[in-house]
Image (cartoon, rainbow, N blue to C red; front, side, top):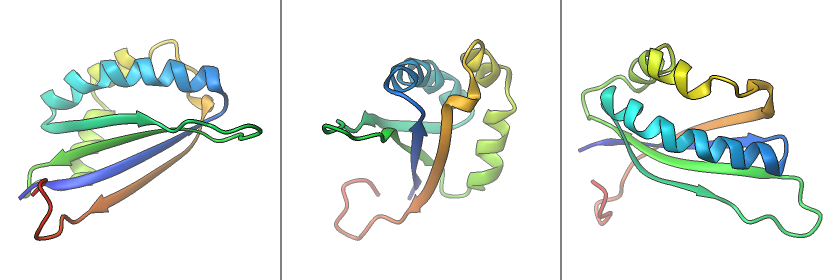
Length: 109
């Protein structure tokens, strides 16, 4: 069974969200090289007056992998650095990570 992780990035502005959405498209192949599978990447529509600009990503790791070790290896990789080149990291104002445990009935087990 895989280990799933929901990653939620909060961006400073709608423009930063669009830029980071494009960066995530670049992250997918690099993450795969580090044995992190991407199952989906989403943005949340903002309502009138909303100041929350978020990108959600559902990724998984092999059951035997240490999630933080695997993620750390990717974050220190040349692929990650190349993806982030030219992006002002201060535009990401928050990152939340949740490890998800599939239920017995979940199709993603």
